[in-house]
Each structure stands twice: as structure tokens, then as C-alpha cells.
Image 1 (cartoon, helix red, strand yellow):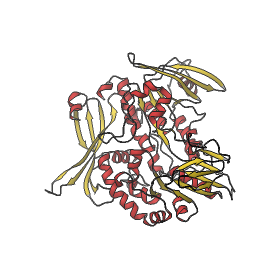
Image 2 (cartoon, rainbow, N blue to C red):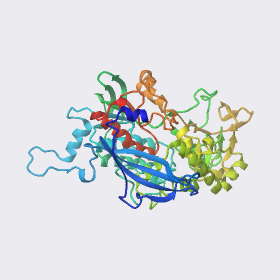
Image 3 (tube, rainbow, N blue to C red):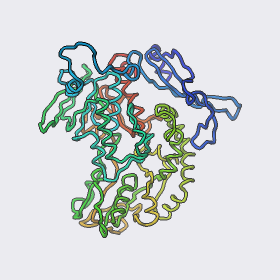
Image 4 (cartoon, rainbow, N blue to C red):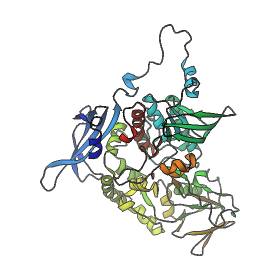
Length: 544
């Protein structure tokens, strides 16, 4: 950090740093600085200004047990806007119309047609591949910064990445954690959002924010000119039933295909092509259990969120269902876990979302991990009856990396957990059967065989076996040469930061965007500010 600051003294020079007294929530406050309320401290929001921008921050003080002095526990600052390139919101909102006599003027619909189809010959500054929450949020941020961005997606509709998931999928995160920037969910929105409702909201969001998006579009070639610092992108797009080929020359490409890669499916497993039952698929392809299927047998391989949800779906439709758990899983109830981990920030009557995000992101991950050890113990205490029942049923539990629970498992591994919304009790009660810790040796015509010599009959088999790394998707889209320049993705680097996401990837023209709704909402601004700074010459790539 010292080296970085000394290398860029002008652009990083701090002109002002002040306590933020703009609201009671932001003023210095005596409050716990841990997740269980054992350690009291003083926290305050900050405002700051540099030569090139303005930012916000949070400082936390705690009393040193050795000398009784108040000392800084954490200090966090983050850029919020670039001077001269502020977002077009609030007092800077567009007029929407030019009053007076304007011969030949176009109405809004005509202008949007030209803009979204690039009929005026312009080139997008940023091409975003993927229109899930990652792509939509960074496109929205760039829009407000005046950066021309184009989303492309191979699906026919925005939101299809959610519509095409299993029938009963509902978000396990609460609404307050999942707002999108600029257009939060309405006051009447349910606490937990069904996938099809979410998909429709994505369409509404893209339309309302006037995001440029080409659907049924897929890149066929992407090459980068290091000298010109520009991409040449060829893509095929089907519009109104007609296939067209377009060539674009964006300065930046953002891969927003999700922090995970393609599906992990055991295509080389012995007998995988010999199954004669009704369904054999990966969880990403599972549509839903067939109604009134009493007597049918289903096997779900995988003991995390998707596996549990699908097993519960099978049970509710009359199947004799077995969950195959190959390794341990971190389990917490939705009620206990979300209250301990998100309570006070993401709840009804909580602080504004931007304040909650700043507070949530302001704790360095190594410290957050230590604080979550105590939080995980508190959750386990509240879930004691459920966890004891699972253990008795033979389900193998863990407490996350170094006993730090849910978030660290997500940050370090990207999975390996289940937020219980009902399936755990079904396992405890024996309504969902369990096969634990035994490797599958083969798929047979109507069964699975295991290393312990047992065999389970099956009419349907779903492999809820997760996904590969985002870097592998990068390889499929961009090719080996580009992918080899990209650093490893996800998990922590040597400084405790999530690797490669939302920041320099190792390839000057390529950026990665992914994560859950909260991460997408917060880091979309960070990524958009970096791209805006590069586009306007405020910063150079090697200065970031």
C-alpha cells in the first residue's frame, strides 16, 4: 500500500477526511463491533476527497485492553465518484425532452431504437457478456457514468438464466440483501424472491434503466490488439427470426457470466450413458419433479443448496428420494443464520442499502473471518436441535473454513453449504433418505452403484455437483491465449481479497464481474469507476 501511494502521489493525495454527520446513522456511535454483541466500540462513517474523486469510509475504534486507550480497529475508504464525471442522478438527472421548436426531432422510442441497435455507427466502449445480476448492475452503473455499454446474452430473454432453473427455486437471501442499484424492489415485494418473479424483474430493470442489450447473441471470435488497446468482436445474433453477424470494436470486455464456470457433470463416469430411467441431468438442467409420482425413486447427488432444494421438491411430489452426500456440508437455518449474519444491516427498518453495503464491505476479510467464528458458534447454538438431528441421521456437518461458517465458505470455495428452508428436517425425519460418504462407482440402467458394494434403484438421477471455475468459462469464450493471461479467480489472495474479480485480471482489456446480489450491487460501482477512469484518461491501467 505504501509503495502504491508513493508511486502515485498526486492522484492518491488526500485533500480532506471528515466524520460524516449527514444522518444520525452515520454519526459516531457506540455499538458492538462483532456479530454477537460481546465487544463494544465506536464506529463512524467518513467522507473524503482526493484530487480525482470523492469517497466514503468507515472507522471503528475499540479500547486496547492493555493500556485502556481507544485505538483504530479498522479503517476503510472507497471511491464513490470521479470529479467531473458524476452519475446522472438526482440534481443531474436528464431533462428527458428538449422544449421549443426542434424540426425533425425524434421521440424517446425512436431515440432508444437508434441507441440500442447502434444504428448511428457508434461503437460500445464496453461489451458485457451476460445479463444476469452481474451484467445488469455493471451496465446500470456505466449508464449513469455516461459510458456506452452493450450487454449480450445467448438467451432469448433477459432473466432466462433464472427462468430455466428448477421449478421451485426461490432465493435463499432476503430482499434487503438483494436490491439492485437505482431501482430497489417495491415495498410489497416478498421477503424471499421466486426465480420467475426475479426473472421478470430483471426484464423490467433493463427496460426501465434503458440498458442496451442484444439477446440470442453469442460471440464467435474475440481478438485483442495490445497496441490499439481495442477488441475486435464478431458475434451472431438472431433478431426477429433472422440471423445477423455483427463486428464490434469495444475498448473493454466484461465477462459477467457468473463467478462459477460451466456445470460439473461426471460425463466420464462408468455407465453414465447406460441409464434407462426417466431423467439423468445436472441440477442446472433440472426442470422439476413430476406431480403425483408416488412409487417413483429419485437420487440427488450433492449435499448443498441445489441438492437439498431438489430433494425437497422430489419428496413433495411423492417420490422415494435419496440424497447422496459425498463430503461434509455447512448447514444453518435461514432464520438463525440470516438474523446473526445480516441482522442490523439487511432487514426491515435497517439502514439505507448503500450504508449497509459500506458497513458490510468495510471489514477486511481476514478480520471478518475471525469475527465469523464467533458468529458461527452463535448460529450453531440457535440451531442445536436441528444440527443434532442431522448428525444422528448420519449427515456430515462442518463449520466452514477454520470454523468461520457460511460467508467464508462462499468466499473461499464458492459453495459447500445449505441455508435450510425445510429439507434438513425432512432428512432428520427420514423422509429424505441419506447415503453419506461413499463414492459412486457406476451408473447402471436403473440404479447407482457405490464403492461399499451397495446399489440404489432410481427412476431419476440429478447431479447437483456444482460448477467449475469462472476462468474455465473465460477459456471457452476467449480461447487459451487470453485465458492464460487471466489470473486465478475467486478465493482469497495473499492480502485476503477475492482474487481477480472486479479488478485487474492480468489482461488489460478484460474484466470479470460476478458474485451474489450484494457483491454485484456494491462492486459494480467499483468496476464502473475503474472503466470510466481508464476511458477518460484519469488513470492508467498500471496505476490501478
